[in-house]
Length: 329
Image 1 (cartoon, one colour):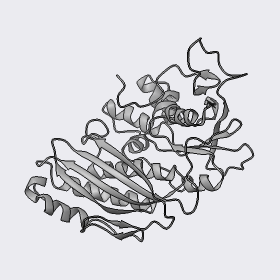
Image 2 (image 1 turned 30 degrees about the vertical axis):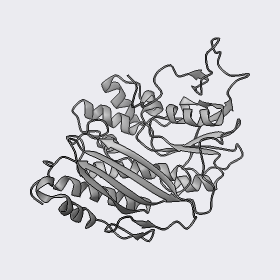
Image 3 (image 1 turned 180 degrees about the vertical axis):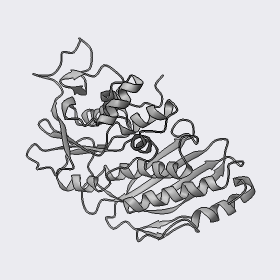
Image 4 (image 1 turned 90 degrees about the horizontal axis):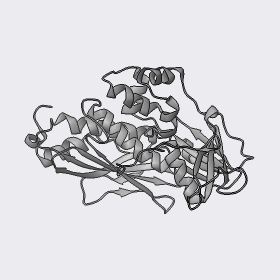
């Protein structure tokens, strides 16, 4: 496809994008009408939305449009899985400059479609508008299949903390790209295209998870949401965390302790959950810590007037930033 988005025009672009979409059973009525119709067998719909802004969440010199599409869909579909639901559909909101090559949004849609296929979802529709920079907004929908949603508020003292998926790989890949390199390729690809363990969300719910979330902002930050919502403390055992030899090599090369990436990196969209202590977890789940009372014996000392730490590492507060904050200085 030659030319720009402006030359193609709004309706030409919409035709190109919708022509890339595959039919799925959950999407009863797709693009072409005022709104889509998506099946909701459970009679409850789990919904989540995220926005990716060029320069903040992706760079076109680091990632292809296809990569961005996979990443945009993945980070939203992971939120659905982390509630214990099965993804069913996504909606796309797209802002693009008129001078953007027309191939870019088309390849973006290919990435969104293919990531949806991995998760078992479909593309139900969306909207495109003109703007000064590329902005990709995805709304994802899912179905609970008769289960209750697994929220961040159910963790109890004594629960196990377990994770499935990668931690720190995207952050290590970002460090590699920031220094102008493109290898080790596995870590660079983890940053460009995260691979959330979608089936683990509903499976974790079936195992009796008391709380669950995906790791989007960093393990400490996201476990902090569970600890706050559940009014508990969570202690992570650093020795239980997986740090591949290549991650250590990258850390040595760039002068960063890889434990920092694993604890605070985010964007891998692993799923972390708490389970009753008697739960027999499959091998895909790695136990990395435990849930404790927020105060009492064994808790680290807290200065007068200070709040107790929500998440500790090996029993001690983590003194550095715990993860990503869009509005931090």
